[in-house]
Image (cartoon, rainbow, N blue to C red; front, side):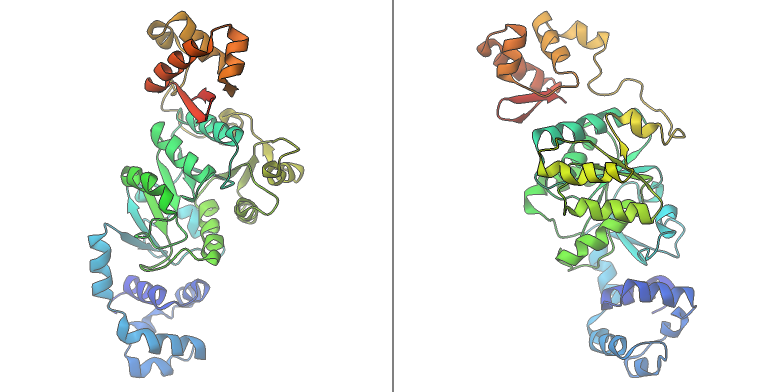
Length: 363
């Protein structure tokens, strides 16, 4: 086995429970695996019978050198809880992953992160809120964290990339598996960002892995923001982990008639901080460094110089609002056909976004 890093990798691939690996580390038992042979597994007194059977059955099929070669070909690296580059904040949680696999940029600098999670079936309001908060965060030196799922997760990652914010995707599968397939375009955009997982190559995204994944999302973060969540949403599991890990919990208030607001509204009842803009979050993290005073979407004089009076009317109308093209026409008096032309130009210039059909917001 050669060293402790490789032993932890071996135990993870073999399927030994993470808490047990942490126990082996804390009790100083890893040395017993240094020169492990198949016929000596039964002599490891600290293993359960199940663990002995598991290691015996898997021993011949696990080739650590081959596994590391595959990871290298896939540009995947790994860090163990014993390594200096393992995220310090994550190391302190209960049941911290003994090993993290990662791909992309920024693993060694995981520090100031905000987790943003929510429903897989967001409303236009939820998507707009996500884009608004993320865009406003571009002013600060902070990374976003989410779970690479459909819905709010996908919006977090795409809005972060568009706003030039480093974003971290935590997977419920191994890193070579792109799940869900419909998010393939996001995986392609993540090359300069970061994907992490505690699962070895060949691990499919089964249901229980999503729960394990959620503790990492909150564990590496300063706090968790929930944007739209039903009463039984997995996002609430992440929020509960955050509470257990002594992280800040934030929530976007929602329509009391919407099932996708029930979870957020319940969190607020329990003491989560109500969030209306990114400043509400930054107030809790005053130590964050401001790095960009002109955030994407700012209605500055620079924009005034670039667009016509009617285009500026639409831009200012959409500030902090989501409106349909009919609403915009009724408010401004600009006819529908002309509004379509204006909105197409503003989309091309990356100022507005078409949320769904004829509904628009600032990007």
